[in-house]
Amino acid sequence: MAQNLTQPSPYVDEIDLRELIKILIESKKLIISTILIFTITSIIYSLSLKTEFKSSSLFEIGYFEMLDGTQQLIVEPSEIIKDMELHLIIKNPDKEFNQTLSMLPIQNKLIEFKTKSFSSETNEKLLNKFFSYIDDYHASYVKSYNQNKKNDLYTQIDLIESEIKLQRFNNANIIKKNITTLKFLDQKISQLREIIADNQNILFLLQNDPQLLIERATISPNLNSLTNIHINRITQLELDKNSLLENNNMLELENNLTELKEQIKTLEVELESVKNLKIKTSGPIKGIKTTTVKPKTQLIISMGIIMGFIAGILLVIIINFIKSFKENEA
Image (tube, rainbow, N blue to C red; front, side, top):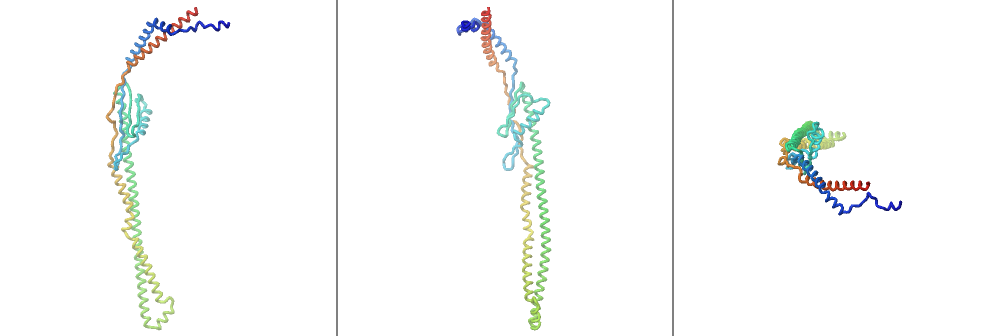
């Protein structure tokens, strides 16, 4: 039993390299036939392949030309790409855009389109539909942007004009009130001056009659004190009057509205710029470029020859293994 275990199995005969080369040479007809079969198959396959067309284009996103010379994109390339993927590809019920298509944003102002199919006309038709969609999107966006911007500016101007009217109305009321107060102060000052003049006349008469002067001096307050009180009162009223005159300056009140008027001018300039806003429309750069992608016939045939050669060798080895196995069984 132990002796049998140490003996090599008849099914595990080793084939040295010379023997293998001899077998392959003897079976060269089979190998050549296999190579021919694979070669013919690869030729037929390569001839059955259709010519493909690869189309590409760079599409420039439109922008606004601002008054300061800067440019403002109508829409970000990544945003319009997401919108097209949603509305033209995902939500497309007819599956019209089911061929390979790539859209890549470049330099934040361009979109690179690439597609491939068996028809250059199909490629151009597809890309033109995407271009048309972007143009419509831009037109709608610009119209909405202009209208909303103008409405917003008109609203701001109306609000400031209303504020100016209210301010002027308040100023007029202030002036009217101040004029009434000034008239009252003038009247009061005039009355006090008349009283002072009367007191001074009385003092003059009293000075000529010592007895009356002594009797009047016993009355408190005396005429001199009353006169001084009236003079001080007139001085205070004059100060109040001057203060009102300063606040009643119409020019100064109008100057308070200067800032509001300047804001309106700024908004009107911006409104005019929106009305005359220059827009650089979107469009493809240098049109659509289409190249022909022909089948790689030589590569396919070469691979067929190589695969045929490998398959022929494997076939010879398998046949000889089966033959050796049967001989050992016998």
